[in-house]
Amino acid sequence: MPEGHTLHRLARLHHRRYVGTPVEVSSPQGRFAAEAAVVDGHVMTAAEAHGKHLFHHYGPHGIVHVHLGLYGAFTEQTLPATEPVGQVRMRIVGGTHWTDLRGPTRCELLTLPEAEKIVARLGPDPLRRDADPERAWDRIRRSRTSVAALLMDQSVIAGVGNVYRAEVLFRQQLAPTLPGKSLAREQWDAIWADLCELMRDGVRVGRIDTVAWEHRPEVTGRAPRNDRHGGEVYVYRRAGQPCLVCGTAVAHAELVGRNLYWCPTCQAA
Image (cartoon, rainbow, N blue to C red; front, side, top):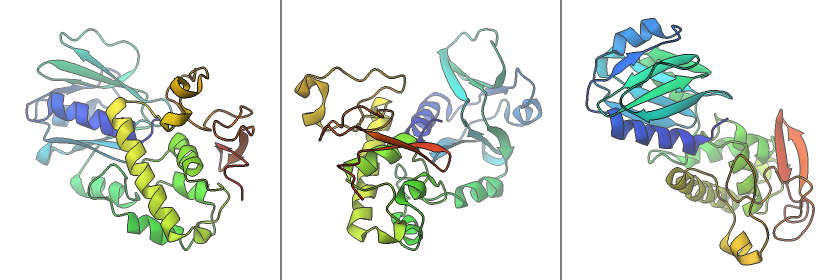
């Protein structure tokens, strides 16, 4: 599932390409046809992301809400538009580009109050200027749940997925099983600051890189990471491989239905 930086990149891209001018909106697949007809031909006034949720604003005509889920994806092309290929839930055509959306978990037209209810259920987003990390800390400091599970809870922090969760815990040398209420305030401040830095870099470069310069292939001489997720990481999807810092085999377990990776030495309980 795409993490928060991907949705913020999409929001910025769609803002540049479509906001401020009328756009054509359709649903070649048909499942979004009635809603698309409501905003078709109207001006997109804003495109923004909250965590893993994308919102296209059309003023009084409503807000298109998209959650990509596990299988959703946008494809971006320059005009002229071609015939739809596959199950295109929503197509947007502007003055210079067109965008197709396939396979999202959610693609719906909402009123402003309905969109605000979705945002209200989310925790602070490290990529938003209006984020209040105190809201997350208030939840974490009172919880017996592990910090690894809390970081993946979108009602606690919005936009953090499996990669950022594993990597920020490694970078802060925190055991993933540590209960939230056992996390020190200075540790939480360091987690939040690190997430802000890492995720902003993810928006800038379009991939997740978490490895410090002294541990990168260019310095150590090791082979670069070869993985479909891209980016240089410390522990994510590196189970059984040596830790880039201490050499201990990276551990793997399942937590709340998701894969968890950590170094038993660097992140000792």
